[in-house]
Length: 226
Image 1 (cartoon, helix red, strand yellow):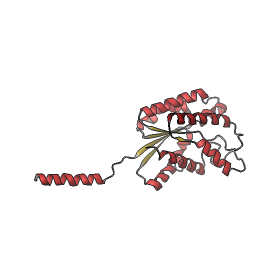
Image 2 (cartoon, helix red, strand yellow):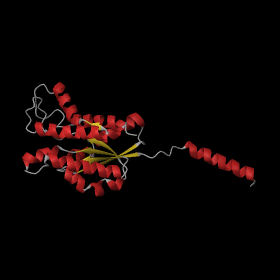
Image 3 (cartoon, one colour):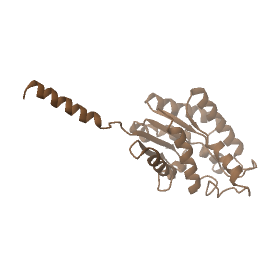
Image 4 (cartoon, rainbow, N blue to C red):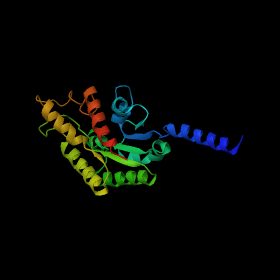
């Protein structure tokens, strides 16, 4: 084969290769408690987000991975960070935790004190960023859907959510404010002041509407992360 033919063959091969899209999927890990654990099941918010992404971008842009365990609090996430999240080498990690840190203080005498919550939270984020992952933060949504501030844990949930908001702003980290989103949704759609049955089945875990709401709220932020 002459040198001209070799050059032509190389050129044609290069053009063919360039015509293919070699962009790898963005890997997103959802790190949290039982809400996230259920979110990875059929009908859960992670699987519904798969459908949202497929409808908007096609099905080959993102890989969504659930890493939720029931009952987990922020220090549980810290302890299993390496085994359950870092091993995935994720492009993006969504942290959705805080309900059990508040809820378990009264339900089972455990939970996480406010000052310790922030310290563990910062440690989790620092380790993820050091590993090269972008981070998206979420405020804990609700423990009860009443709209008159009469849910038992409203005060603590507001305090912990305010810390996450402040931390996200200080560190310039994208935030999904589910606490504010759920409150606003219930103010419009819960005229009977029910404690559950709107976005949650049991004051905490999600109905189909709740799963879809969370999927939409998270996706609207995730797709902005470059």
